[in-house]
Amino acid sequence: MSTNSQDQEIDLGQVFKKMKDFFNSFLDLIFDFILFVKRNIIILIVLLVLGVGIGFYLDKNNKAYSHTIIVTPNFGSADYLYAKIDLLNAKNKEKDTLFLNSIGIKEIENFGKIEIEPIIDVYKFITNKPENFDLIKLMAEDGDLQKIIENDITSKNYPFHSIKFNTKGITNYKKTVEPILTFLNTSDYFESIKKQNLQNIQEKMIANDSTIAQINSLLNEFASTSSNNQKNDKLVYYNENNQLNDIIKTKEALVEAQGNNRISLINSDKTIKEISSTINIKNNEGLKNKMKIVIPFILLILFFIVDVLRRFYKNQIIKRNQ
Image (cartoon, rainbow, N blue to C red; front, side):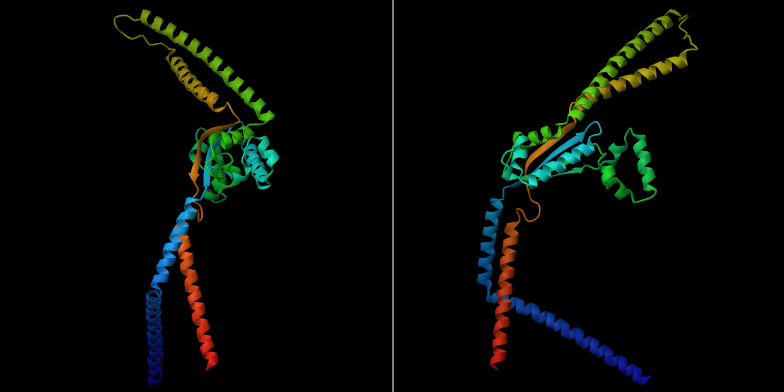
């Protein structure tokens, strides 16, 4: 028992000794760093000021700008939209001047990467579309809901999509946004679908207006009959009241449908409809516009590495001379 107790005391003593040595080494390291700063304070200040100056200059001359176009694809053209963006990006990577000029994009050397991504909005995806809600619910039973709403198949069916591209320098709507949208809307097939869709909406509106007019006439006739049959300020009830309620509900549904049709006429005038565009936003991705912080840090690290290597070289020379 006494031997085990002594061994434990020895082990604990060694642990505490190592902890003490480590702590002392850490304090020595901090003190060495303080001496290093004190010894080289002027050089460090010069490097810091120089780095900040160079960083400000580089940030000031950063001419990278990002631009965003939010669109909605009509007539089931989501796959067509993504294929068109992929083609445009491929041609841009190849610097196919002939192709890009043919669709109206000038100053190709300043035109950067273009990409598209869905604006994930599950609520708009399922609003007034019970089949979409049932589909998501069914798919969620066999997998992760988050992955389902973000996968390629689901994401292409969201109503809004964001097209993003970069340029070197400021651009304007006519130089870039307008040519891109014109290119996206160049399709004989979808142009035919668009014309037929607009014609269908207009025919629905004419039919709905006619039905609403008939309902109004019927309601006016009913109101006239009702007033003629009133006696002694007592209401006369008709067996047709239930039918009347159905007629009124039908009119409300038709009026609502007419409102939706008017909105559809506005939204369906193009295959790829532009919702909004934001251009000339200074690009701060990655290290862009952060050089005033990055450059001083790099200079200080380089100076520290050079000093360590210099000390290592001197120590090795001393050892060899001994």
